[in-house]
Length: 126
Length: 157
Image 1 (cartoon, rainbow over the protein chains, first blue to last red):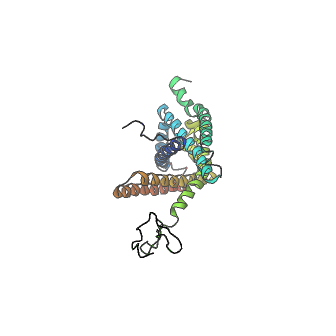
Image 2 (cartoon, helix red, strand yellow):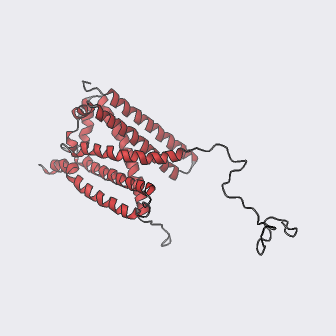
Image 3 (cartoon, rainbow over the protein chains, first blue to last red):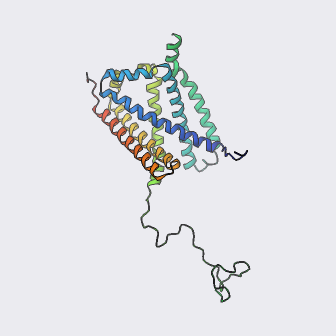
């Protein structure tokens, strides 16, 4: 490919890409999550057994990733709504994206201990 | 049109158009003609666009509340089990919360994936099969989840 022909986009394009990717990932998780919750209609043991996998350290890391995807999709979704319905939205879309990323970083830092704490205790002892 | 220019598209350059010599009429693109089908798709895409925004706002509250309860408060994921679910679904408030979240999230996600399929699957057959699979999985998941919430039995054993 000749140099300089790949469109790299800017904040608007990359937030659009990230919104798609996180949305598809969340949808696939939702499908699995309804199936695992449906096991409460089978037996308490079947449900508790599948929930036990959610408590393992590796899946805890996946849960942290899920939280990351959901928080980005939620915050950026609010930004999209502001761009569409707020008269000054399109003008401030970049500033709003960096605000979204700032809030996202703060919330992700706050989620480290609650989401990953039990996995750390399991791995390294309490 | 003067006799010297029999064609409507002839002699454009240098032609002095005026009231007596009007410029050739150019039809606007996408103009409705006699051959245009009377029925269009209606406002479905606009309704879908609006639904994504309205359901999105509600889902921000429902899903972040759900994450707080399930993953953050009271020991996070380690407290979850059959007894915890039974305790929460004993309250109709949480049943309605989860039911609303299920329906809105599934429809929001299904419409999002429909858009993605429309964007990337180019062959008509591929689109047909992917959307058929999507709609089947969506209807199945919504019905299964609804059934589970309404028929939940804490004394199943």
